[in-house]
Length: 445
Ligand SMILES: *Cc1c(COP(=O)(O)O)cnc(C)c1O
Image (cartoon, rainbow, N blue to C red; front, side, top):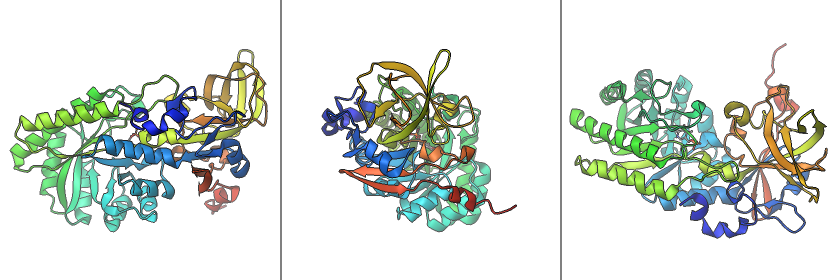
């Protein structure tokens, strides 16, 4: 079963949308044709907060957290915060009882500023800086996932009995985009299982008095749709747990099965089979442990995108419509600075006119951004009403993950505000960036 099926109360309300799984479940289309999310019309948000604006539906994030906890009641759910991190989001994650993955002192600072319990924080990163490690020790993070032999020494020198996990590269190809395939051999993340690097890291961590090795971690990439890939990684990791016990007499109590679960961005794309994942991965771990006489480890999973992607919508205003020789370009007031994913991964998005209805039939257009690159495209060949014109509002769904967090100041364009919606009320989480903000760091002439 998928997330949408696991949240039945939220399902019927969005059946009228052409593509329910890519819009927040609170999305409504009133007879006037004006789309609302969390009880607030998107056009009203555009009027109040300007454009572009990131909107995030709090109920959807919380519902996703609950669906994971229900599907995996005995498994720790750690939100991979790099997908979308603000103090507000951290607060929801804390209240929903999840753990939190951070990758830098900056992400940790956001978590601490939101009052997130440090013992539920897990620090990741293939090249953590001395400042990252010091900040983590100062905050008292629960676990650090160590990623290199250098780090074992560096962290060992700073820490006293710091619980750590070893990041292992299990040699599983999650068949995702190369930029987010992190489980295959010969890459920058983790210690290789095949070369014996992982076992060497275990030896070194066990011998380091500043560290307390509590488990193993693996991460096979993002946008992984095949449960079988997680199962294979789990089997290989249990085998390594068994080898650690045989070589060192140490039973490691934790196994962190990272890897991002696929989310649909377009109509018809498959959703992640969460209950299948829960059954098969736990089944594989239990079976492999039982046949070796190994106690089953406590499992952790680390969804990022699948907790927040669908909760987010970006609202843009059309600046101009231009007719090329073959294509119609609809240019909006944002682009690759607020959505880097098309340029980074060739990501595709749906687009919808909001704020007014139109009886004019749809025509295929290319929605482009305002930046000085031809590759600054938001969506290619998408249908919009033929009377689309300057001043119209467009909504792009599924922008909750890796939008705000990957935003840049390219062309010195200020990053958009983040507005949360819930029960008919908007709440500003992050204000929009001003020219003054941009100049504040430019301190020399
Ligand atoms: C990014 C990340 C994830 C989550 O990936 P998503 O695709 O956002 O779900 C999980 N674990 C680790 C270690 C990560 O770095």
